[in-house]
Image (cartoon, rainbow, N blue to C red):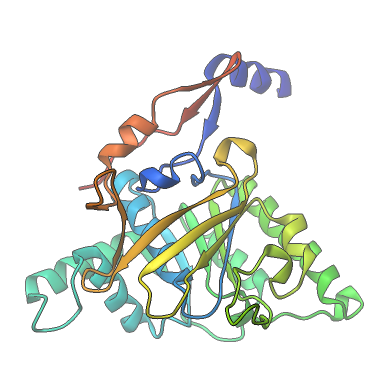
Length: 298
């Protein structure tokens, strides 16, 4: 069986991940089934906005469905409102969105998102719920909102993390889903009057995140008022999903969406048409890296 799969990889190429909508990220990051992504960054720097942008694009481009545990966004109705604003690229208010748009967004969210509304959940609770769902991604945002018991791991957070993150990675591979974790950094120190982007060693829990992580992304802004975000790919494994590096995205507060600047400085919002170019085979030596194909539901 292993040899058959091995020969299949040789003949068909190793599957890369899904294009996430931005040309600047095409060679740096993609979302592959059976893998994990950890997202870190200082509070209010846009970690959740970046993640929900990616997930919204995965749904638009490929029809992916999502399981969410995101209590920091708010209650389920408030999460629906946030997603509706992204879906229609306008504020969720009576002055900006029609009743027809409100209802169409609700129907879309109902179809593609499942929101976990509970407290004091453990990672085992999340995995039990996920095993009963037909979804393509799981989100825990943020990690510290789960209940973590270190007692079975000699009271040590690092030992607990090594075990638990390994369990998450195995679950993702077995279920062929993508697992997103949003992780706050430890308290950062000012350097020359400014904060630097936190590294994966500065995530709460330390080096376990670096040891177990596949894709690790930092979202960084120079100031809370700046709409320019540096998206830093700090780790990219397996190697077909992307590369270490960084690029810039800009958050449009009116549309609740990110955009990049094109070659002539114009705004370029995520679009699925770029994904067709991304889905062409990319040759690396004698092997072919092919991108998963999929149709858009819209």
